[in-house]
Image (cartoon, rainbow, N blue to C red; front, side, top):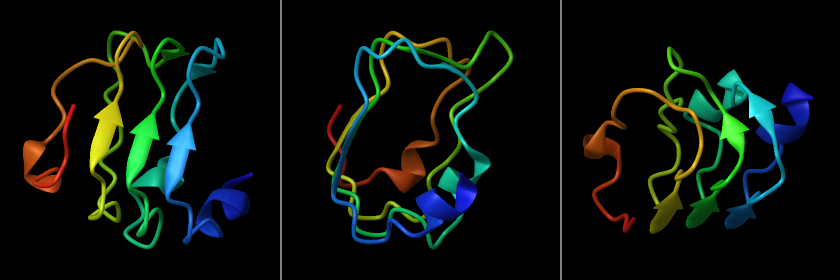
Length: 88
């Protein structure tokens, strides 16, 4: 549900590792008002994306300190300009 993601403005940690999730990341993740307090995101070892799908740019996640997108099926590179405070 898209509204559920939009209401998680105070979420600081999101860890969805090793769940065999597939498909696209919800487009709402690109909304500037989404994840404004997120500090840690780890979605490694799933099957998000495919060979033509890149990870949505999480513009609102300006407080992100750690990011792990490994072992998924994303293509391309994540724009580093949005991740100045982030470790990988």
